[in-house]
Length: 330
Image 1 (tube, rainbow, N blue to C red):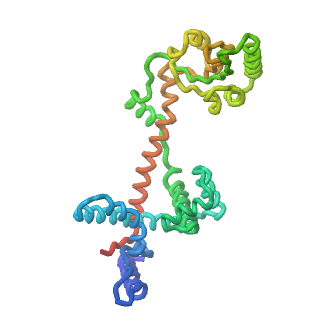
Image 2: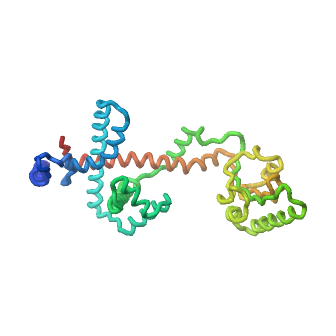
Image 3: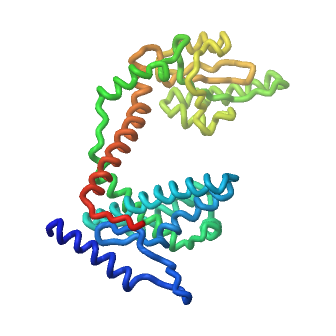
């Protein structure tokens, strides 16, 4: 279709909808109208107002002057309309590529949200009702989001690559954010078997026997993290005794001496401490720039991937807009 006839088609769409699709109240007042046409689809004033409503209340409750309110509402209205145009374009691309999301996938996504937020179906429905939504509205919105996400992954994210050179360049430029100071850093875990400060010799002997049984498990090759979760009496047992990354100079001389003898992946003998019998495990030792870089690499890669992805998405949307027939009606 030539540009001339495409323009005529756009005019016909607008004219037909204006003549047949506009509702009026009894007084003749227009209650809906077209605010934009995106290729062969319309965005109505009702669509715009529905998406704008949550922001209007916040702006009006913000204690601004009428003039400030007017300017801010005008800006937000433009931003929301811009988002609706982008949404319409991506929905059209979803249809063009035949991308689909099943009802089962939507159900699974909603169940995941409920689990992560520890809410029941009834609580979710109540929360949605406060926002003027039904569960079916929410399902439809979720499905649209998942469709667009799958489209963006197909068109943008799958083509986004972060190179080793880009990661290294970022690391060198922001080295101070990642380099540790003060010598070696140890990534440690521990297992604690508590001893009462009032325990007699016999009671201490029984507790130590328990610690020796734990040590035997470790020597037989069982995972330190799992053994810590099962047997440690430390508050950190649930994390597998994870003490994080520390300089051992903050530990007692007795513990420093034992840990200082170890390599990565090794654990201490049973150490009799003020807190009870403890066993420490050296998960990793940060003692060189190479290791600093390796630890920072994943963080930098994720950061750059997100930044590059956002730029590519903006370029992709701009390209869709450039090739689309978009008419904004004032």
